[in-house]
Image: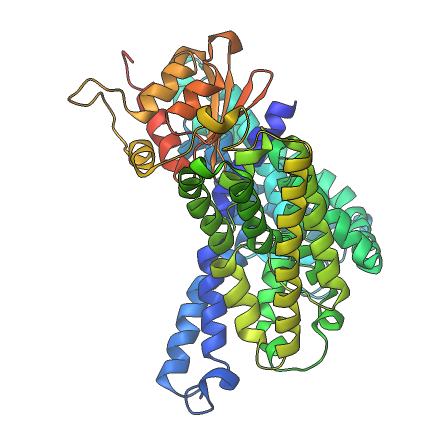
Length: 530
């Protein structure tokens, strides 16, 4: 079961990775339309520059305004065990069918379900438009459920043979036919249950917001501590992209109101209290620096130069784009207690910031969320909030440093460059990175296997690979026989940052280019004779 959940969490990254660029463009264009930053003459609604920013902003809103469709199409890429492109098509068609069924049933029998489908969409009606269809506003929750069900049908029946005279209905057509009748039932169930779910969501919104700093602390702690299992997606997803605390999710609703918030001096915590549940990115920016310095300062002097070669790029990746796995997995499996401390400090930082009135959409790094979506737009009218934010963050950087250094020395932990790991721990040099990022389909001229071929061999060959997908930095694999898989050291020697094992499931920490590695492996294992 855990393997399935982890696979689902990894699949979530396919659509999620579309959001950083879109968020940056939206944030910058909003900033450049604000007269507080560019002046009244530039921010003139009739001027060419303002109109150009409006055009770019509208293009960037594509991702945020169509999240249900994007999740519906994106999830099968990671979940489908065969023909993922066809699974995406079946998922999209079935999702639209489900919504059309809801519209038709709601229009005819809405009163029987306590729903008035004659209302206009939006506000508190619980209705929305998806691809022009008036339907329930299930946000990404409905898309994820429908996509998961259709992908399960696809994985089960895609290769089911039919009699020759029904051959035209095989494959994707058969999946859509089966899903058609499943969607009919699910639409009825949705009409019966979703109004109750909406009441529950509103109750949870009120509870989480009213719980203040305690709720923020608990949310952030769970989001961090569950990273090794991949289950953290289920913590932040409903908050950031779904309706857990705001109607459209924190990311969309904060971005929609950035310009209005930037032009008022009223407390942002009063205007957008839900923004306390999107402060987890602060640990990536401020905590990562403290952790890196602690690891560096506690290493043996003769190993510090090599260790710096690993820590500097990993830390910069965490600070600037919010991808923390390369740094966190450096110490996670050597000294798990440090990760628990890291989660505790992350939650404490978030709740402290919230106590000082700091809210926003801060789930990423400096470049993708903090500067374009928070500090930049808010600095003019919320200068003290930004300064207070930075001061508290820097203080916590020192806290991370001293706490990690104390624990490492006090318990003599074998972090990189220390103790038993002083000589045999894998520290990555420029040559390692070049080897790791080299992509080849076949053996090179010297007979050396490519990274992808080597990984396949280390996993016991293509016949031993049961399922394969990835998240932002990890290759997630389920094998048939775990005894055929090489030891962790095999993978770290070819450039991996670490390996997580849970029964027949493995997570190989590759790095930010893991998506390309996964695609190459998919291509290789599908070739005949390999």
